[in-house]
Image 1 (cartoon, rainbow, N blue to C red):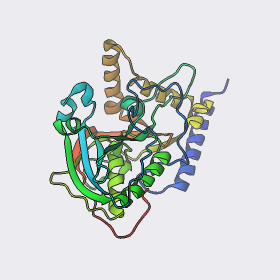
Image 2: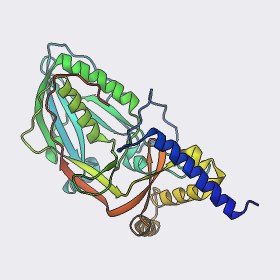
Image 3: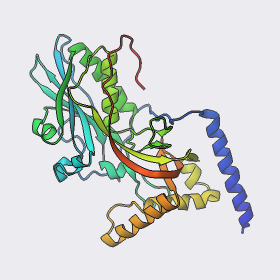
Image 4: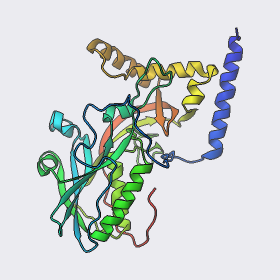
Length: 339
């Protein structure tokens, strides 16, 4: 049997080695969102209660239009899960964002949005499977493009506003960019992690969600020469975690494949077990109390980002949902590649 002191020594050596490797490759925040060569196949274990993009192209493909066409651009916003809860989440400023298009030559409307394939909970927390030691994630997100704009859906409790016009040529260039963006940016990230709520706070991690896709698309349109403007304040939902400087822990194989890091692996599993789905009322109440103790009293949070784990030393106010303004971008003359 290996003495406890030896196990502790090995833990420290491995963690220091991982941290050193990480520091050699990165020296600034926020951590860049990792992109991939192509979107992987979906694991059959991941199954959505509500199917993703049921009436549109789930690969985000967009048909070409004539270069001479004039395309109106619409800002779309509605409460999250409006189909289930109506305007309830809108009262808390928890909103979903999308973009609408209308072709003057063809007389056809389109909606484009980016959201989670398997609902928000599965993108925010993993499943703990008895046959898989590492937490199992169903956290893909993707673009959906479909014909039509449901005017009532977007305007009744949210926003449907024309913010500009583009040419058919600009629309086609945007469509090619969307396809590449959709193929290389494959996973949804709920949290934005900052050092504190002040305007000058350090951002440790950026979210990657529906509103971020809208912002990227607006920037691309602006780079193509589009002039976008709104008569109302352009606010978007952000979900923040607040922490001190995060500590890199490693990926699945480093943490869950190393006997020396068994204690760390156990802690991560225990943390995510608090947020498991389909709990009874009694179990949920107990889990919420334990989550409060872990996050607020013990100041611990384990973040999964770029398919790697980080430890967040939490700070007040710990978590916050905001509805803050992100202005529409101004048109630019030079063309840059959007990251």
